[in-house]
Length: 431
Image (cartoon, rainbow, N blue to C red; front, top):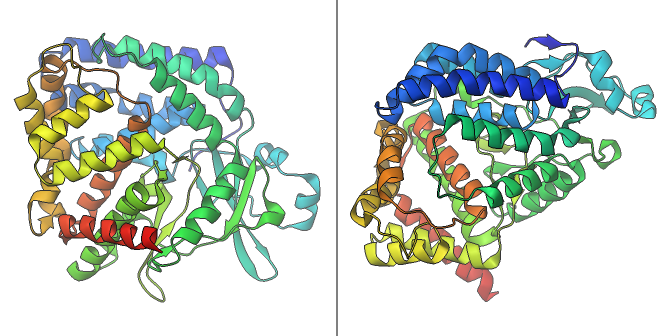
């Protein structure tokens, strides 16, 4: 990891960095606008991958998160060299030197604890340092100074950046979405909020011991610092070197998908940030998922989550008419303007493909590529309504889960799993 003496946190310095990225990538995308989305992204992002990674690395905050998402979703089709650069944003990003980051830690804690000055990991909003207390290892996540104050301006800059790229249809009103992003990032920087989310998920997942949620150390947690027990495990980047059997991969994949269905159908609360850095594979004494970060947790409205549950069920049953009608109800598709609904149903069937086979082989899928290839067609052929802002974060979660399952190369019956979770929900409600 590269050491930083400071973070680019000033409004003008951040705006200038974003403007440079927009000018470079936007110009490249415009020149290649007649290509498919895969080739557009490949040509523009590959060319400027190093610039994008370097600029996001020193800004941190919401734009660092954008880089993480790009690494996650672009990994299926970006050239290996470009993907490696972007992937470095997840677990090996630049970190702030100890003399700067320790200013966020209360003086009395520094006097009581011997905290390792080299971080274990660095992310978009903060970095993690280890320490021992009474013989036990703990992980202390320390938020970067000024990140919370920069959110509002970062979201404004995000609007400018997206406008400069000119990739979205003009009829889509994203104001509600940008507001939702701002609110979510603000919540994510409140570590006491994350403490409550972590403990809530730990309790809800007691019946599912394959998931390990680290216990909170309240003594050394506040709104800028969250301390948990340290979980020993492997990064998802190490998957291929762990020697997992196909059966183990299947078990891990099935349970990872179960977690998504539990969040959507039972908990009705979704951890929306499904990137590699938020999960561990614990191999000893038994195989488990380590769940590390509950800052980006979303509780959608009851109305929205009920609609979304029905949307998934309708898609799993290949109910075209019901699915299209539900999309209109939710505002995804306009009722007043014509759309190529056959094309959209074709697109939906790509997303729903895992439900349509008795055992779906995630390792052989190219869903990510197919989905991105369809985007230009959808933009040209569908009259979008006013999609609910909650959908942005849940759609992001599903995309992340799909990508992780693809990398895991798991095989399992998705439809059977969905029915198991719905049955579990009915049993819980009957108690």
